[in-house]
Length: 424
Image 1 (cartoon, one colour):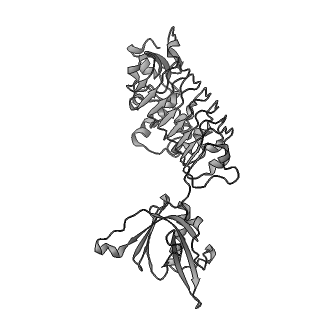
Image 2: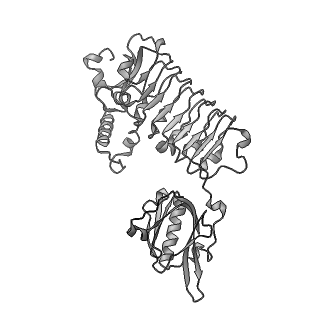
Image 3: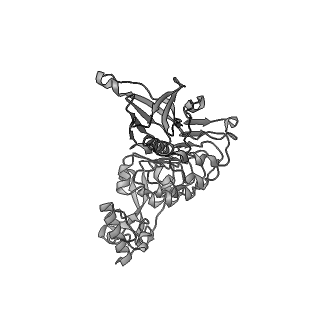
């Protein structure tokens, strides 16, 4: 059994002389073996091979020589093996968590003298090859068609992949199987659609799809594993005409760039992206602002770029109501939803079907916030147009318009007050 990882040695015998070993971790290959001794028993050993020591250093595992295994950080690919003789600590890092967990389980069973024949542990310790000691490829850039890996595939340890301007017309499904990929750039290609496999990637943090031929953003992009990891999304310079409400499911999104498209409006649910601080929707066809004008959302924005849109072309006559489903007395369902929403916000509790009826759970995510009283609104709410200046939205707004109509979400009680009687 063998694993490849970064390795650093700590000699405990030097601690009494105030000597500390310093240096970078080296790439190493660790292997386990259980060799019969010819007397009905067996000896378990660990071999550590590095580029400087290809033959490797041998450690006895059984007989109480493996003092301790520190595996608290195994999910991050880190662990420490501590031996009695010699008094060495082997610090392991940059290892595949699944492989490391299996390796440590086998090492522990060998240390206890348990039977491991069913686990396929070899009887001979073999030195590592040059390929096993090579550092994994974590970055790859393809800027020529001749460099595209058509037959050999992508390195499995990739963290960053950039495929730039080679006329790629469809998404390569092999990319979705890169378990460690955190940055994906497909800029300057000819992509027209995003496959469902992309939305299921659970480690992707940065996605750049600008300068393609996308006409829409599919719902599966927001409903998969990306909802918990994606922090940067750039879909600028495409042909996108609508940004779906499901964009609010990208809980970790910090930067959204969608300039130079064909958007006519923004989704009202955009304000529920609590970590979003940079938004660029310039050079679109937006005439009224929605989703980005609520008080708390606008105050936390570090950059809001809305220039070169069509705010000056708006002409409002009569009552500026876009949508109204309010009533003087909210329904019992509406009151229950508001109460549960307020209780969840105050306590951060996890709502279970045993506590809250399923009919309410299914509707709890479909809410907006009244911009007057800040309570959650579900079925009964109104959206009205309100003229405002740029300074009233945020101090970090960049625009060429002096006045803008924003979509103002409000409940019936706030709308019926004296300053809002013109709305209702």
